[in-house]
Amino acid sequence: MKKFATFAILILVLAACKKPEDDNSNEFSEYIVGQWNIDELEADITTDILGNPVQIPAEAISLNGFYQFNSDQTFKYMVDTDMEIIIPGIGIDTIPYKDEQEGTYEIINDNDIRLNSQGGSTIFEVKSKSPSTIIGDINEEIDTMALKLDLEIEMILRK
Image 1 (spheres, rainbow, N blue to C red):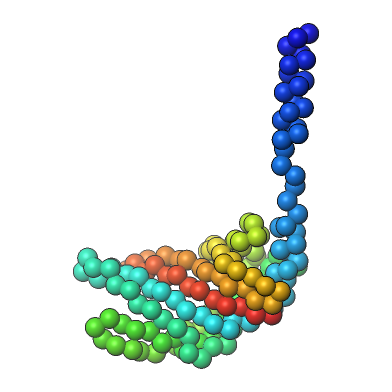
Image 2 (image 1 turned 180 degrees about the vertical axis):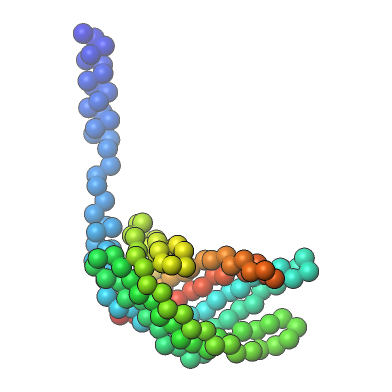
């Protein structure tokens, strides 16, 4: 009987220590729904050339783009921009960049959204947010035949 009482007390203590359900992710799910225009876009590209790491900063100088998050957890993304890049030892160049994707998204927590599309899966990390603005990062690794690129992309999205 003494073991049973000890076991019952242990169960009660564990139940009392259980964390309450976090309702913030539901609030964030409602918050994210809608069209968010990409107002600013910057990237830091790191690659290795002949054994030396090279940093290539890039910034959108003309920008048209958005993320559309729907309540059924689908999304659409479109960007059409000219990126100004600074290539060390060469100088400034401008390259056009256009991309469109559709897929599903998953709210991982109040800071991370997993975006799933035909291009794979990536995490959009929310750095800060207000009722009409999100500042976030996407980190990607691209492996081409010639180069391996590490991309850190920062965006400012506005409703």
